[in-house]
Length: 96
Image (tube, rainbow, N blue to C red):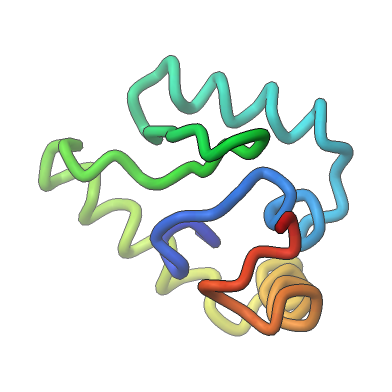
């Protein structure tokens, strides 16, 4: 859901927001990439992820509905607050 809100995020931003260890986060993002749900790009040492814009419209609609459903709900709100606090957000990665 954070990827929907911010379009593209570095692994370190996601780990900071969610509180998961980097290897754990990277493994799950790799699974999402292999399933075709997210795309990645390397920028030096960092890998940035985004929702695959080539997904069928119905998948994007389901993701949008899910995003609407988590607004105002924990742990999404806490993750969003942690992301905003740690980065000052977006455009300025805490990785740099």
